[in-house]
Image (cartoon, rainbow, N blue to C red; front, top):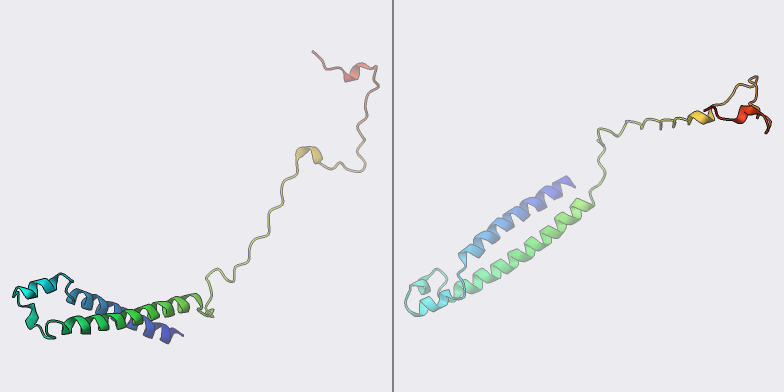
Length: 130
């Protein structure tokens, strides 16, 4: 799978550079007006209109290849098989969760400890000293 990724990526970069070159090589729509007044662009390598057809068809074909390689790279990036190497943290186990501290009021009493008793309602033991 890595070989195909390298091949598709190399084709993608070469097509992208060629597309940039072809787009910069083409002249705009307004450049034909200059040829009518004798600017000299009609004496090009492909003739007055031959370059527009050849360059535009080549650009369209390379744009299609660029689009397909982009889709291929996206597919290969999302459907990559799991590697055997794994992560650095793959073998580390998580520590056990720490026990939450119990509130002070819920301290268990020993079995032989005397139980707290309430004072009778009329006694002065329930009064708060001032």
